[in-house]
Length: 464
View 1 (cartoon, rainbow, N blue to C red):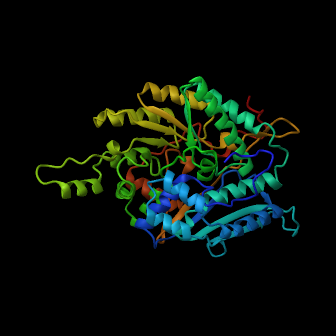
View 2 (view 1 turned 60 degrees about the vertical axis):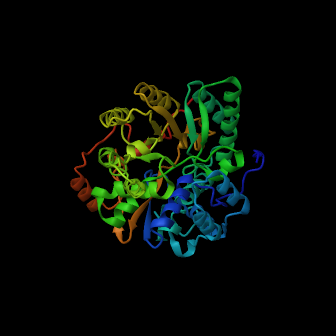
View 3 (view 1 turned 120 degrees about the horizontal axis):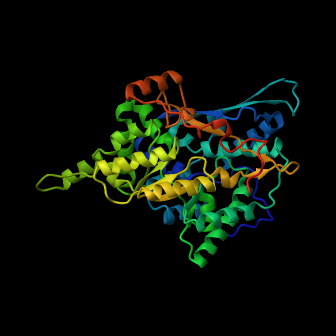
């Protein structure tokens, strides 16, 4: 379906597919393994100086309530059946009948700094999500996208859509000319759906031009399933931190949680399917202790199938096609992964997906380093595509919100994320400290990891 740039898409979120693919894949796995687990999610604004007005919050509340009206269409179901064949029929049957219940599952509050009762009162927004994991997992991306849309609809309004398609095309061409393989990952912090659709038009145009002229780079897809469907490009994604956080909280076994989470994943989708592993939930070194272990579900299957002789099961590192780098120093990560694969005798060329606050210059730098180390290198670029604007009156950057929603508990136990950068620690501090000690986690800070200024400052000049 071609997008008409002159007709902005309706405000808010109106489709289950207007989300990241990994939300659907994780929901599929949760339905299989943890259908009765209760969870909570917590909202965090890492840019607290960016506040909403009461009017903006009321708009946000209205949009949240409308999520109850979303249902999977027949066209969307057919798209998932034909394109996302790893999603089993039991899950698709579930999703077809599924409805969100924001009235009972979301607690949205507004605390004014100086409460006069007026629409222009500024204040702090808080969002708490609670309910069954298999149901509430679909809230994170819409809530983040809606909060960002509220801010740029009511608070920072000194911007226009002018040039967004052209800017995306220019970015896409630079990346393709440099040989980069790129996916669009920008739903959660987009300015709004219309912006993301304009970006898509520009990237699709660059994709076609790159193919016409024989460029080695590729626009490989998007994490946004709805836009991938509309524009006829592949939806891209595998798994998020949430999966590892949830399994660890449920089992209360952080030493073995990564292995169990990986094993459940392979058990749900099969070996080599959705095969990019996210390494940093509890720190990459901790992850690698499990990644080099035999896959238990494959070991059992092979033993049962064997009639004689020893069975040598493959390890997770062999089964997975590669890894995703999402925190810490990418240079250190590449070196660590090269050493890991070499020490474990894995000669097959693996993939590294970089996805942490990227721009063109960083992509070019990381590609050079990763290619030199013998990896297939790809990039998931988000906010740099879908929330790159300037203030019309000054020409200075109009910076995005840095907002996150993370799993905060599962089965009554605190859920945490440690990552490879102290700035991305998430969850109950006492649990974070205990898990770090138990796992022998070595604290890391990275000069590029300041979460309050990941995409620049308001006084910065616009990037050329």
